[in-house]
Image (cartoon, rainbow, N blue to C red; front, side):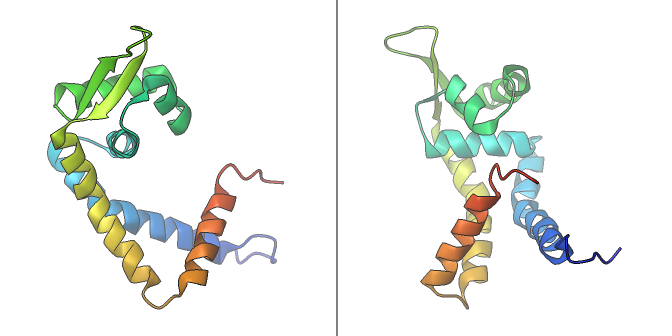
Length: 144
């Protein structure tokens, strides 16, 4: 199937291969702890926004409470995430990375950051803005 111009196989395949390689380094790190990509996403976003609520995390990840429960419990039990009751509403649960959680988030992000830096080596600031615009445009883009 080569396409008739309506399907951009080159970009589709580029995204497949870029994602495969982009996630391979963190996958190897996570595997040592028995964690997976869901754990990676939780650690990443909690580290980026300490104090976010469970509801905020569910909204960010677009997953169900049931999907998050097991992963979050493992991260809390393993000492990577701390859950604290909200100061005004005790039912609200705020999430914070522990020192180990911050270290894990950085260990997972560093090889990804190196890949990004290598990809941008031959580009200028305008190219970076174009890539960010492209990635933003891909998020929640409706197919026609």
